[in-house]
Image (cartoon, rainbow, N blue to C red; front, side, top):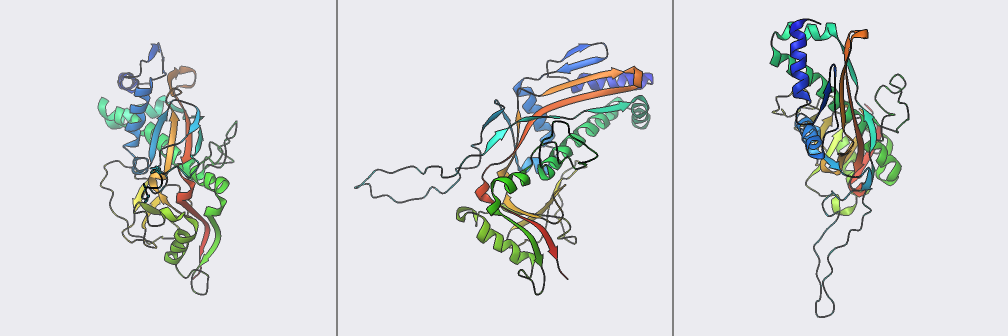
Length: 329
C-alpha cells in the first residue's frame, strides 16, 4: 500500500469509528456502539435512500417483540348514547406483528491495489474517504432493500451462488404476506383484451376493493409498487436527491387511482398495494457490531459489520400482493 493511501485510510478509519467508543490496537479497530450511536449511524444511511426514508427504520431494545407502529390500526369515529352507557375508546382489532431480529453480516474485503487506485484517482484525503464510505454504505443499503423484497427464509449458512438475490438471508416483506396473509394475495393473473382484467388499472382496483380491509381501501397514503416489467414505459418523477443511488421512483401517472412507484429489486411481474409506512425494518440497537482489521498476508483490509434485523409488515390487513402478472398483447 502506498504511503499516501495509508495516511488516507488511517484518517478514514478514525472517522468511520468516531462516536462509537471504538477499541483500537495496531491494525485492528472494533466497536459495539451504544443504542444512540447505532441509531445515528443507521439514520445517516437511511437519509441516502428514498425507500428507507419512506418506510420505518426502528431500533428496538429486544430481539423479539410485538410491533405497535402502524397508526391505531383502525378507525376511531363513533357515536354513543351516554345516557345508556359510557363511551368506549376503540380497541385494536388487529393482531400486532411479531418481530424477531436475526443477525445479518455485511462483510467486505478490499485489496491494497484497489485502495491505491482509489487514492490515485481521488488525489485527496477527503475524496478518498467519500469513495470508501460510499462503497460500503451503498452496498449495505442495497442489500437491505434486496432482502426486504426478495428474502424467503434465513439459512444458517447462506449461499450466494444458489441465492444471488439474498433469498436465504432473512424473511422479507413479501414473503411475510405470502405466509401470514394468503387471502391478501393474488397470483397467475393475465391482463389484456379478452382476459379477466383488461388493464392494470382494473386489476389494481379489484385488489383494493377485494383484498384490502375496508378501512384502508381509500387511505390517501396507499401506493402501488409496480414491477418494472409491467410498466416499462412509465415516466417517473425526478427525485431531487443528490445521492447516486435512488432506490424508489414515483411515476407521474397514477395506477388504478393510486400513486404508482417502482423500487429497486422489487419483482418485475408483481404489484404490492400498501402504505409505505406499513413496511418496517427493525434492528436490535444492542447488537450492532463493527470491526476493521488489516491482513497483510493477503494484501487486504477487512471490514466486518453485523446487525440483528427483522423485516416487518405492520398491518397485514392494509396490504395486497399480486404476483406472476402477465401482460397479454
